[in-house]
Structures are given as C-alpha cells and as structure tokens.
Length: 126
Image (cartoon, rainbow, N blue to C red; front, side, top):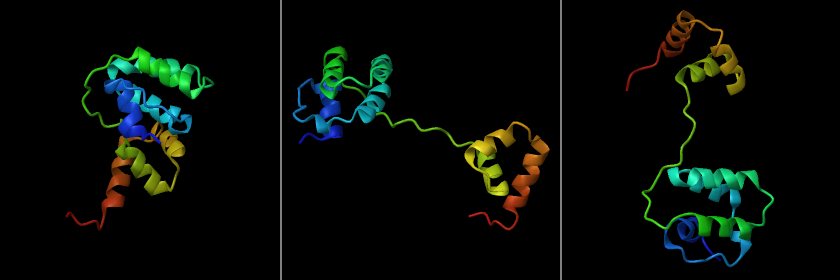
C-alpha cells in the first residue's frame, strides 16, 4: 500500500520511481490539488481536471511522464482568505457566507464601523 503524500506525489514530482501498485491508493482530487500548487504543474492539473473520467492509472502515467523531475520547495496549500468584514457581518446578523457577501456589496463603510464597534464593546485586549 503506497502512501499518497510520502510516495505517490513525490514519485510524480521528483523521484520518478513508479510506485502505484494499487489504484485505490491514488486519489485524483488530492493529486491534482498537490500538482496545482506548483507553477510548472498548474496546466497539467488543469488538463487532468478536464478529463475526470480517465482511469486512475492513466492520470498517474500522464503526470509521471509529463512533469519534470526536480526538487521543488515545500508549498503550503493555498486557502481562500476570510475577509474580516464578511466575518463581522456574519457575526452581527447571523448570516451565512453567501448572504454576508451579498450584504457587503450594499453596506456602507460607516455601517461597518458601527458594527465593528458594537461587536468589540466589552472585549478586552489580550
């Protein structure tokens, strides 16, 4: 049983030793996300996203033979930034992310300042 993060992904990016014995070990979504974190892998990951119906072995072989073998620095996976104003609106009105984003487009800066002041009253600085 091959480990996804310790064997399979490194075999595609740097070691170039075919280690995919069981297709159950290969998770296309996770591999595509890992490959897309690197500038030279974005287009390959995008291409794989266009053909999700391909067998797992074919996807592995595509990456294995397409990506150059080189040492790549560790990259933290990107995550969407949470906007502070969205969080304020969600907390003040008890709204979902979607609803808070809609409200952010129509609320004024003065109203945001008022909401921030209301929510921070009584909060001690640590």
